[in-house]
Length: 432
Image (cartoon, rainbow, N blue to C red):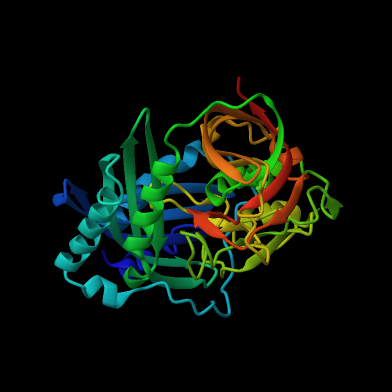
């Protein structure tokens, strides 16, 4: 697809416009029974147009390689009469510079597929050989994705960049008196940074540790949210930081900038430079930056893209996100994480619960913060740790995060959210 030619064909048709180019190549390898059972390759390429005329913004996209300008113009002019006027529609102006970030692993792309599949099969074998009670390994996958993005608009903004993404994942099943499973994954922009041996050991060890779980008494406990569970909580909370939800009156944080809303242990940052979606710029070409959202418990700022920034008279915070060419950009989290502490807190707990995984986080109410989720983890008594099962963890995420007493030093990102282990008081657990 000729990006420059396409832009030249459309730039003078509208009052202002933006052209977005996205190319994605991916390979996915799957290992089963110590052999590669599936290799899947995909390539997607397309362009998306946002154009403004008489205050109306239209969005369309095409994957037509040969006649992209004609396809985009035809779709846009057809749709325009049906669009409502909104004078806050806008595009960002030309940016003076972008952060120098290295997210592209050229060497990893050139590594022979045989070495990549060996990494995957070795990981599966390490899981299987860890303990005789392990009866199955499923979803053992290595995925490699290469992205190329270009943005140009009529305000003079031009941005382009590339990145790679590698993910490793597996689900382990173990059986003794009962049957349990555990799924985990890791990611990196560099293939060599993936540690399949370490991930295999963590998955296998965690699975075995959940055997012979018991249901605990209903009660109020103190304990630890492990990074995976804490990221789920942060994901529920994150919608409250978005200016779109501020505008739609869907956040409890409205008019609370500068107010202490959480534990003074909590500092929350949104960064376009961290997390799985990290890149040099956001979905409309604003340079990636770090935004201090919560500072020692005090809520500092909402997150803005250009549209909602204009509505509130503030600059974009670099929080325009895109999932590809088929949907317009929207205000969203880029890489939201809780700042880690200075020490390992997981071995400090002599009495209480450790919650490793939460089930059903999508059912939580992001506006009120209320949740009621299945939980997997451990009960600790007198220094002894036993697995728990069949329990429900419930409460309100805003209230829960007021009760954080310490953050550990084990920050880990799951997708766009990152968190260390959190030591929390007053966790409501429903058991027997």
